[in-house]
Amino acid sequence: MSTFADRMNEAMQKYDISINEISRRTGINVGTLSHYKRGEFEPKQTNIYLISKALNVSPGWLMGMDLPENSYLLDSEILRMWKKLDYEQQVAVVQYIQSLTTDHTEES
Image 1 (tube, rainbow, N blue to C red):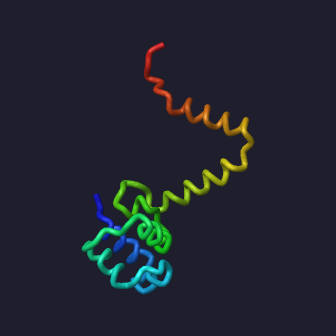
Image 2 (image 1 turned 90 degrees about the vertical axis):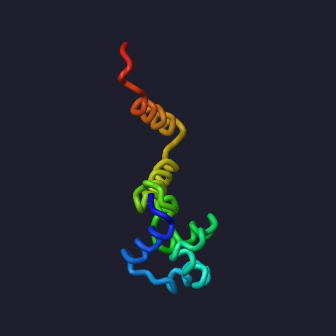
């Protein structure tokens, strides 16, 4: 499993974002960010969120979880669509998802 520092360095390199730019976007001082980048300190949840937004990656991915780098984009898109549905449509969606996740291997 990757560490926060590994993922932070990976995203900074991939998106060509400097520590100074992350500091500007988050309000976290450069010294603190440098400690995170070197793996000397683990950030608090609030700072993880701010850094993930600055790097345009999901907080879970940044913390080293086995998630897509931009999984939050999918989450927000699903939520946006969900809010457009009326109650009956939401019930139908939940029932459909339940039918997809039911174990169909049981014998009848």
